[in-house]
Length: 66
Image 1 (tube, rainbow, N blue to C red):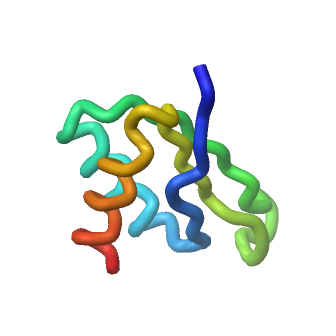
Image 2: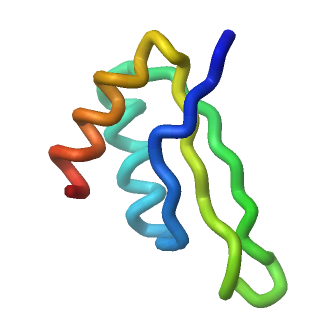
């Protein structure tokens, strides 16, 4: 399976909202958290989807988050 980065943020609340949106639309995704657990002031939350779902996922995210 080929995974594509579709969203990256440092805001944990937006990250959780995007995950819920993708799940509600039955889009399979993986996450990657590179935020420092000690300081929480650098790094990011990343969401990856399969290449087949990339266009739909980006549209859903764009419509919701902007």
